[in-house]
Image (tube, rainbow, N blue to C red; front, top):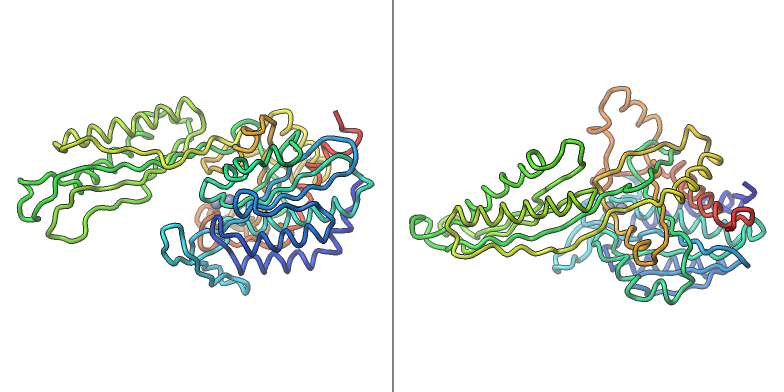
Length: 419
Ligand code: ZN
Ligand code: ZN
C-alpha cells in the first residue's frame, strides 16, 4: 500500500472539528442544505469538480487522475427526528420541520455525520496524493437515506448519465461495534424493507351502542396480535424476518366508535421469496380480520416504500476484504451475518448495473465495548443506531472510516490492480 495518509493526519484536527460541527447541526432528509454547502465548499477547495443539487440536496464530486477504473464512493448526509440524549458537549438541540409540517427534534442518531466527514477525509487523501493512484473517483454525498428516497432521487436526477459511470460502488456505515473494527459479508449484507399502510374500515357510532357499529379499533387490536404470528408461525426459524407495527391510529375520543383505523407496518426480509410470502400473509390476515369483524368493506393495503436487500458482490467483497486485511491486519477485519436493518445503497448498484460493496465500521469505545462483552450486556448497554444515546467515539472511528474508504478504493485504483 503506497498511499500516504499524511494529508489526513495533518487535517485530523480539522476533520474532528467538522464532525462535531455537523453533529451539532443535523438536518432531516432532503433538508441537508447546510451540510451540502460545507461538502461542496470543501471539495472545491481540494480541487474536485463539484455539482450540487443532484437529487435535491445531493452533492457529487469528481476527481480525474488519468487512465483507470471509475470508483464511486458514497456517504449519506441526513439525520433523524430523535431528541438527542447523549450528554455530549456537541450534542444537538436543533429542531426541524418534518414532511408532515410538525416541529421535531433532530439528531444524527444514525451516524451519517461520521460518513460525511470520513468521505471528505478520503477525498482529501486522494487529492493530496495523486501519484499513488490512477483512474477516476466519483464521491457522492446522498440526501434522504432515512426517507428511503435519497438514492432514488440522485439516480432519477441523472447520477449515472451526467457523471462518469462507476465500475464499482463502495459505501460504509458506522455501527455499534468496537471502534477500529471493519466488518462485512458477501451476498445480502442488509435486508429488504417494506413499509405498508393498512386502512381498516368499520362503521362508526355511539360508544354506548357497539351493536349498531363495526368497531375498527377492536379489528386493529386483533390484527396487531395476529400479525405477530407471521414470523413465529409462517417463516422458517433460520430466516431473519421482522414484522413491526410501528404506528396505530384510530379514533378521537372515548364515547365515539370511529369509522376507520390505520396501521403502519414495517417488514424486514432477506430474500425475495420470503418477502413475497410475508407480504401475502399480512394482506391475507388483514382481509380475514376485516371479514371476521363483519367490516362493510375490504381494507386498503398500500405499499409506502420498498427498499431492496443490499447485496454485496462476492468478487468485489473479496477484493475489499483482502485490501482491508492487508492494511488493518486480519484481526481487525471480521465477517458479519446479514442484518435486518436496511439501506437504499443497494439501489445504486442495481440502477448502474455494476457491483457494489458495503461494509460496517465500529464506533464504540473499545474498553466500553469490551466491558459490556465481558458482562454479557452488549444488547442493553451499547446504544444502537437510531437510539437517542448513540454516540460514536470520534477516534479512532473517524480515522478508520477514512482509511477503510481509501484502502478499499485503491484496490481498484492502484495501477497494478487495473483490469
Ligand atoms: Zn439509519
Ligand atoms: Zn444510516
